Length: 628
Figure 1 (tube, helix red, strand yellow):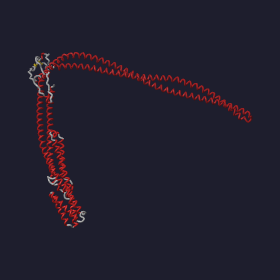
Figure 2: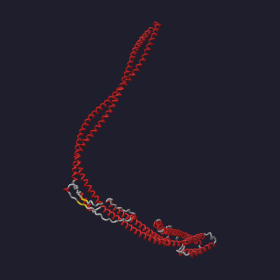
Figure 3: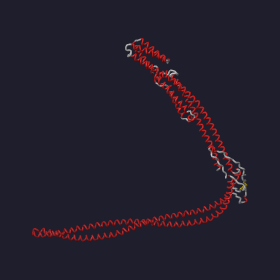
Figure 4: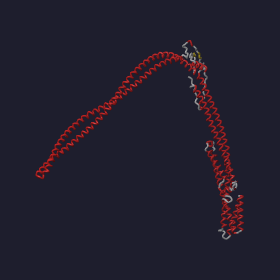
């Protein structure tokens, strides 16, 4: 393992240790925070339960005496009670979902508190609803009852019956006494007074159907309904729903108080346990890190294999070029000291070999210089020859290009002549056809002249028969005959000339056909010559490009040869410089500059047996220190 790697490993161990401590500490404080949050939630639950009890008392003490509550149906205290209930129920739900509550068997207690909260809220809701229905002054059942009583009083005043008025006053007195004292004996007195009132009305004529009777019945019904709700709710902590409400409130308070005492005890124990485990973990990690650090430092010291001063002495001697170091051959070197001894011996051997090899390289470089100069001279001559060949090939390529251009021009002219002769042949064939037609027409004229001559003869015969009267006609007939003879003679001459022209046209057409065939052949040959010239030009261009490439290559060879000669000179200079640099190291070959330094080997000490602790139990792989 490298020296740097050992210190990097030590650094990694320290970083890993402190990181583990930091992570575990963060985790521990997170758990402590969770325990503290559970304590806070239990404390909030306890406060909300107290607030609910306070809201309940404020409702009975203030809202039931507030007309605005009965008018609007909205109770500020009941709303606060409802809000505290919802917050308490939410806290219970959060506690039930907590792993801490489940692990420590507090879930049943929380569920019991949750049920008591729901029962407490339901009981108080029922009481609030019934209290609102009972009403106050002119609202609810009390308001309806007062309205019906006022209507009875108006009807009695209409009848001007003082007895009924006194009865109504007594009845209202029992009502007021009950509402003020909430004592059921006044309810019994009210019932007796109401019964007597009804009997009095029944004794009067039409009493059952009177408005007083009807309104009194409504009045009594509303009062009894109010009494029933009052009895159902209760007027004290020992009556009706109020008893259940108080009992439930006490049970809820006891359950929350017990929970607020038990959970903090548990969380305090867990917090103490977490802090204890954290301290143990920090102690173990620190001990392991120190142990591993000591092992790495010890293996690093063993890696040196000797005193650091002696290692530094060898390094300084090598840096000054003195390789005359005398080592104790009877001792075994270890670690870095062994590597330094081996390196010194190897460098001394290499320097001596460099001295010998540099002499041989110097001789070889001289031969190499001579050879490179010869190659450079040959490359220059080769470049000149290739240059002349390139000029010749370029001239030939130019002539071939000119011939190809001429062949193309000749091909164009031949094609033009061929086209013109083809046009002449077409015109000759057309003229031949025209002469044939003319010959046919003249034959027709000749036939007409013969017929005219016959007609003229017939006319002459008829004129002779006519005698004196036919002389004029005879003259015309003779003139017609003479014209017919002239026409026949001219027609024969024209036919003779036309036949001669036909023969000549046919001969011309044959001659043109004979000329076209060689011209076609000449055109084909000229085209072949043009194609061959194009191919020759392409070949000449390729040859010219190849020669240009050879010329460029020969130029590059010449330059390379010159550079080779130059590099050879530089090589000789580098060899000289190498000798100068190598002479910096003193290997003892020159006895005049002998400066031997003696290096002692490290004494072999008796090694104590060292046993590594079992680190695998802590999840750490032990480091094995090996020594070659």
